[in-house]
Length: 400
Image (cartoon, rainbow, N blue to C red; front, side):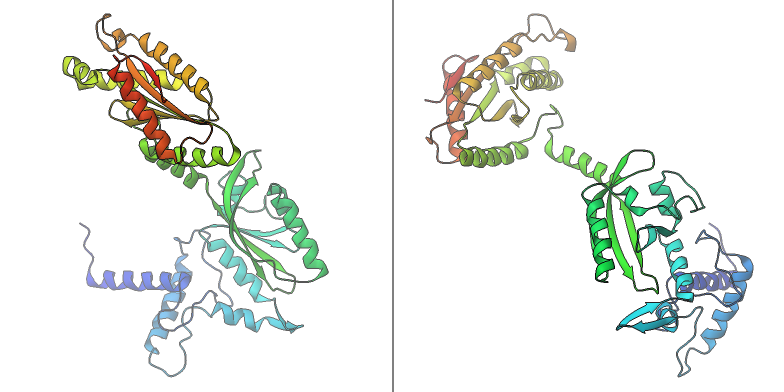
């Protein structure tokens, strides 16, 4: 482990404090600061890299300010309060504060050091300022220069209906001046490479001598991809890749309500593998898992349309929710499932050609209001299944 002498450690502490004061605020006072000396340039575009001369000057300034921490006057600190800087360069017009002068320099510095993509546009939508994160996001490249964005029309990146809405806001603001602010809102942007991305965007009005608007943009693509992956994990049976019981219950409830409101039929089909315990005892649970996967694939391939939900209901049981399907349609689906499963062979997983697996099925349909609830429909299909098993298995039974 690296060990520091007490002198080096003190110097490191002072440097760290200066960095924190530069980008967060002076710890000696209650104000937050963001301004550099008259003859002093701001640090390099990398907020983690500070020129030695700049650091030396401000370290001395900070040390001097620290000695006067107990004085009655507020500590000047490393930099002047940004709000104070704005107010010193402002004027009152019709009761609205207009900002100018050094406030623009302070705003430019703020934009550059924002850790989110940020651009500043004028009242016509022309981009006046942009940081490196905005360049990387909007132009899909990593550049330290923002010249390629400056002067572009912000509207060209917007999709409809946001583009028309934004143009309308601009026209209304010119007729009747008003702040154009809105909280973070999800939208889609057109990129320079022709692709689109989902973003969260907020707009803040700055009452400068010429109105400016700061637009902060957050790329949601990564979060959307992560959300989709998490949703898949939460809604899919990991062994069979069918929907899980949670999705089945939710879809049954949803389709039940929709079909009843629209007067459409809805059916439930339950499928149970015959003598599956004996299969596991004879061939092992690994082969049992492979068998479940093959049967699940056969069931999924037999669905009549994409609106139907095929789920692993539990153990060796599967269940289907079939909106807009009546008794004859669910019966045809059950027959196709039986045919496809009876045709399966298991030599590809290392079993003998003589190995065969069958299923029993029961179904029920809500057509004329005979079931009062979705759960009643499910129970009717389950009862039909057990009658099919009692009648000899490898059978299809409909609810009476």
